[in-house]
Image (cartoon, rainbow, N blue to C red; front, top):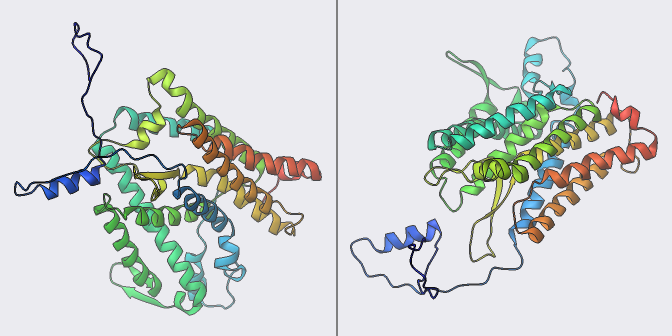
Length: 376
């Protein structure tokens, strides 16, 4: 509120009330038909403890650990090997279970910084409804693939014969029975989420789609060694810090936080896992970005593969320690969020706690050179 130039009064007594969108819709609904609505206003204290954070922490840590061990534990070692038998049908049945692997290179780090920065600036300067819906559409596509991958892999793991049963469809060809069952269900979940994003329970569908998509990505994209991991994670570390803390000095506001909030009259960008603040009278959500799981998750998955290919156990391996480092790094993120009362780039804490852990442990064991040039 702006005062007129000659207004020198200091004692303002104008009540201002802020209500959430969901509460506002309830008020408008109650006022339909010119009905009289009475409201009692109060100013509650913000809860000292955010009960959503432990659940969000557990969700992120579980997703990272699950993605790392997925192939070995869920798919099974025997599924990775070529099936016995001379028939072509046996070979075709195994193909869907083993997605094509994309191995990252050190140059990927520079490509990531350039492409991600361009996308972020595009969304910042063209922060419109159509750009937000474009991101929603891409998320729906990725979520559909992720849900299908998770469900079909679990079903085939429980019933191996289900993956061999195929049905020939016109204009499509042979399709497994699992796909015919799982794909419509996954599509239903995606459509329901896309059309009910403002629902109080939309976060459930978003989390399911997001977790499925991230686990699928971490099966396809892999790091060969910590040389590539260092290049990518340090680049992501600097990228996160720049666009959260330094960008306000150039663009007058934090580019990353502005993009994450989305438009006022359009959908928010769904590139986060979220949990409602049930213990907070002001409502809202706690969130963690997909990048805060995917980037450290690549290193966690590498450490698990490295331990298995080199015959390492829990005591002399790297996976348990890197996983513990990720858990502590995420905890430090929430401590920093509580102490500083402002948005924190999670990779500021996660990168030192994961990359630093495996590098320090490798140096202490005399295996740093092997980790640096490993092929896991």
